[in-house]
Image 1 (cartoon, rainbow, N blue to C red):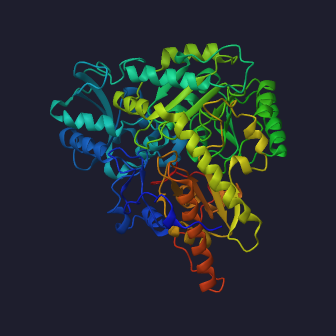
Image 2: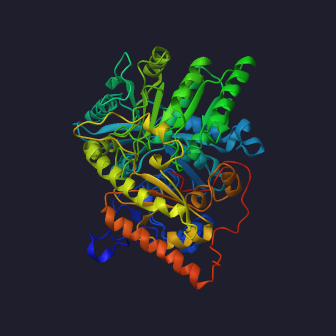
Image 3: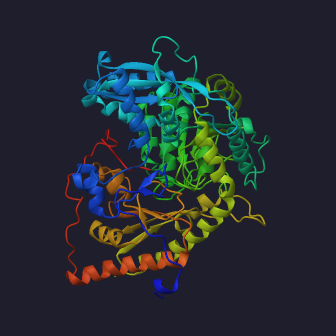
Length: 592
């Protein structure tokens, strides 16, 4: 039955193109309401470029960060320069080493003599839990403006740059800035210790508590403690540090099993000895995985870790993680699982994972106004003692106190939000799913863990139900259309917020391949990601109003098809030839 919008709670109004989503100062998404808007963002069309005031912070430098960079260029360099600032000297050096690496970039690597690292001191206003103004040192990598691409790539890929809240605090005290290059180094680091802020302690304890709430696995000998949780400035920073830990402790190649968030694959391919990618996760692929680990072991280059997601982004598929665990044990490899999409409330991965990585920016925050990530070590893992000793020596807390405070406040109602979002996403996905059986429907598949071809793999990781919370299938689903023309008509007509990220308080739609793999559509298609998919991250709106919005957009597709006698007008953004080289260095993206 078609639902009328007139009788429902109205959906929130969507902002104009280029405006922040949500409409707050440190929003992590941006409204791009049409297929053309997205295409023209990548081509640099002035219509979109001039209207876009924000974007996902790792890809689109936030205005507060831009202002700080501008001051530093004016004071310490010249107008022909660009700079990227980090909260530790280690990160600045890593950025420089990345940009100048011939191993990574070949002839495209930057010469070292055009880069410089400058350290600056600023006094910051105290955040909650601190009494006094503190002096802190930040470290910037400077380069000619026309050579900044590789530095920006590092900023985007590794996610360890300064946050917009930190930059905002800095700008309020910018008159105190001074150049201390070669003088103080890390004399006044922004990093004040693991428990420098009360909010850091609360966050780590909350995550530990969530991981031990209604566990699926009851055979673990040790519980997760607060000290087993490590916070980072972004989800990608957590993945970067997890990979660095593996390289220090094991030092072998990796495997990525199942199609993951695209930058996870790029990161493990880029740093260290590389990775073998298995885009599919069927029974035959599991056998190939085992064969690959056997071959690597026989060659004397054993695989250090198998990376998986539960479920995957954007196709919401989960591998047989018990089988993955058994294969890893056979060859003494580690298993790292990213549970960002499933979430702490819904899934328990500690029966199969040695280490969890999570983007706390997403559903854990739920407000889309702060960036953060975490690593959790499984205290029952055979790797635990070595990894724990390593991190206790190497770990530095670079999650800015103001961000930690916001994240702590946001995450207090995680279970309540997750209950609502689980319910709404399931309602929508199951309402749309029958369309796949109709030969006249433009919808050919709905990707959702509950509707997956192997739903038992996700269900095997669900937490136990309790009186207060019944675990579910998360807030993400993906719709595949018969072709990209239908997808573009649907996307343009859909009355929800549209932009990158997931886990926001409002529903977000994103034409995933068009935005993430706009130069690699052919390769993505070979890996199962068709250009005609629209990813949907469900928010807190009324589920009936959302379904009506989806039905109206589908009606527009049907109407458009009828008016053109079955022939769709060409949709912008699909005529460019797709590159076949996977994960080439982008100039910008909306990947998330």
